[in-house]
Length: 415
Figure 1 (cartoon, helix red, strand yellow):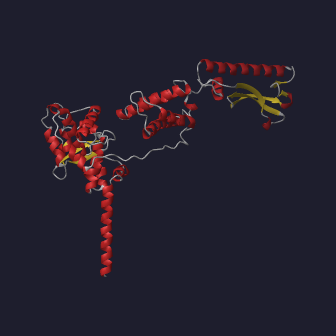
Figure 2: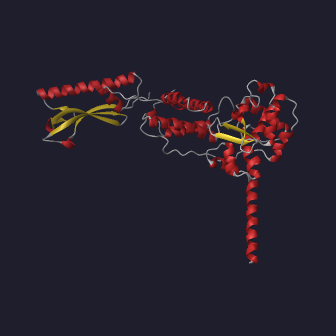
Figure 3: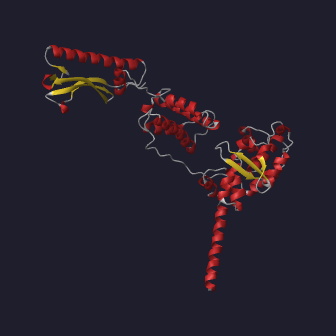
């Protein structure tokens, strides 16, 4: 709980609305310079009011009755303040007023919205997405402990300063499980998840304002790494004696020629190989990440790899197309393969998907609309990221334009 620095009670009359020299009597609660007024449902003569002592003048029966009533109100308001303090509740002028009338408003905390989000979204979001949210939530708690010396804070206290502070915390924090600091775009992802949870609280009317209104994310544009044709051929032609490395290489190459992500390949079965409209075999499945349909005609290399593992002991029982490996092991083994092929790039399994989009398809003249469908993208703008990194394609397109312009010029000269 954040301690109140000021708390006061003031009785006053509303002289701006005097009728027949009678004015309404109010009490004002002030906490940390924030006010809340309560009408006491009494009218008094303005000449009988002592503004310095905040009570009625004289010793008449009416003055004694009103002044006694004011003292009762004062005691009750102070009791409300003490109760909130003892209950470790958030103390505001509005909270004291609500307690006075017996209709307290619940003040939600960061932990409340985290719990609500996790309970409601568990069945809506993919488990990997939920895992990312829990990592973000871990960082939020570490930030609160470091910055506020608390394990939780009230959502009403969230402001722009909290958001900027969280960003700065992430930029200076070094995770214990590895030595590298969190990268800029990863930081923006954590803030994006915090923002989604806070926006949820705003829509639930747990907070009155959005602390992210003035925040502008600063994403750094990064080029998607992919393998060149020569690098891909090195991996394909690599003689491998170790079984585990051979399986990893084959899974990676299959992804390079289909664009299918690791998690989706692990779930492919014989039922996903279907004869397509062209009477040849296609892979037809749904992306686990988005649920979008994916329909990929099998290129010869991909089809050869499926046949190669059709009678493998690790695929027979579950009828999967390939043996199952954890993503962590798979990426670790890929580093060994990169060393053997003298590839200095940070080889990860997801690079196979980038390679399919660039080296295998776009660089060979496959239209970007087709590539977008093959990758299961919902927006062509997502696919255009790959197109931007292909300098060779830009060069080829400009060369074609140059020939076209020269041809048109010659045609004009012949007229």
